[in-house]
Image (cartoon, rainbow, N blue to C red; front, side, top):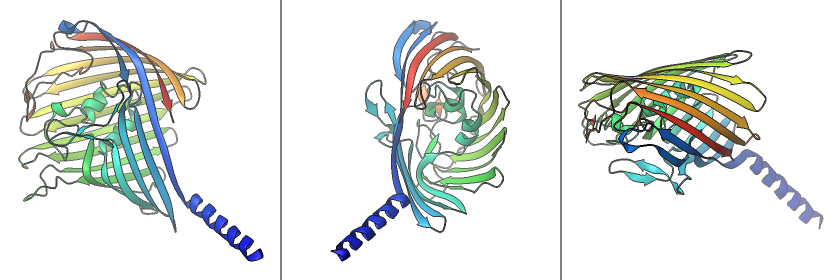
Length: 372
């Protein structure tokens, strides 16, 4: 009897240790709101229920195992949720297929040396955007920093990187990323994505590097990337920087990102400024401005002005309201989609807000976001 009790105690202790060393977390964001856009050109005014307004709706799994000696194995699987219509995942690749874990699918290892992750993951430029984006990556479907700065609007750029033509390049499949440990708040990262094509390692490839510093009230990050097309005859070059500074009563943020396509000499650059003001423990007001400039074969400028109010009902639930004013220098017209991008030069710089037949629009949004 004593031996049985002792054995059970040892087994319980082992199970407790294993539980402490290994963990799997299910998490996500479910966000939806009512959106109304007026002055929407020939399409007229539009009212819709949209998912992922304040933050992109998502679900995911992440796990970590303590290997001892400061080493840990880990994995992450994350996919987009379109909870307004009840679907999951977005199209990636050529031909495009719906990917359940389109946002991230990685396995890796970390320790005192830093971390290495392999699979589908964010490009390094999202670090500089995410650190200091004027809206905190809100309204990703229409944000200039996400659409154009972080290459999320694939039709604007064409077939660069591992995802193929007309697909978002914000995340790269078949990639390996190294992130250094931080030294007094500073560090760096390197990333390589492989097109996995014969007779040319550079075909449909991504190569990037970034540096960052984030300590005390000051944070700054910069990134550089080069992407090739599927025949290694054209190149997209991207670089950006983000800066934030925390004051006693506000947080100031600014970003600049530029993406250049060699063959057409087309450049899309986004300059953004923003401020967060916590006016009460649960209430934060945000003001943001973006200027998006297209140069090369065609030229255009677009401005977006944002006013956002967020009210935290709890640590996990937030209600919000926002107003956006967007305009373009050129009247938005229909563009021809080609392998080289949209009309090989033209793109609607107020994508998702100003529609065909107009050069300005106003948007009012109210919604709720829950994190789990």
